[in-house]
Image (cartoon, rainbow, N blue to C red; front, top):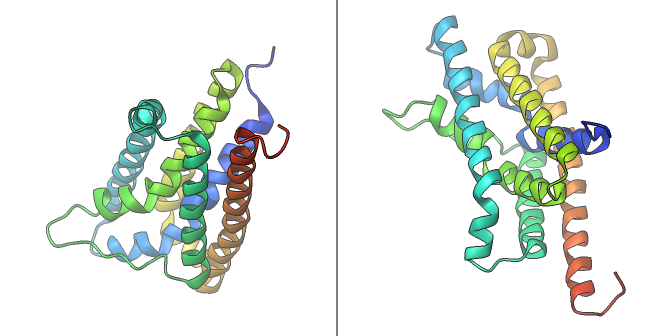
Length: 209
């Protein structure tokens, strides 16, 4: 028995990567931390990732209880999640991902970096769906944990070395990566919507399962 489901792990990582878009957070992170020292910027990156992962983990663990309590089916969550991710994808394609600014007196590592930039609704919905897909299988649960740890490390490194990444990619390179992420996310969200519609039709007996 394999401890890790490589296909599932890859799917989780790629999906969350294009939703959160670590390279796309680089210019936002630099602008929000422009007055900080290198040490303060590193700490802000660590806090932002910790906050994001805490939020995502809480919903991954307790999300099912919330759905049951509110009588929300998985296909309904999948459909609404697909629409939500499609909106995020359109924002990435339109170049509106940076339309957020820190409020006076608020720690930027918490808001908007930790949430909603990293630990936003798109990532939360996606992780809840992946937990459902895991179905209690040990290999898939381990794969999900490994993928999230790898993603957390990726997010931290992207912000920790934001200055270097920005210089290497340039403004055009960062924009290109963000747009490509938008295209991939649009395709993923559309597939989620189609799968949800199919699940509804199967449950209603319109088509065979």
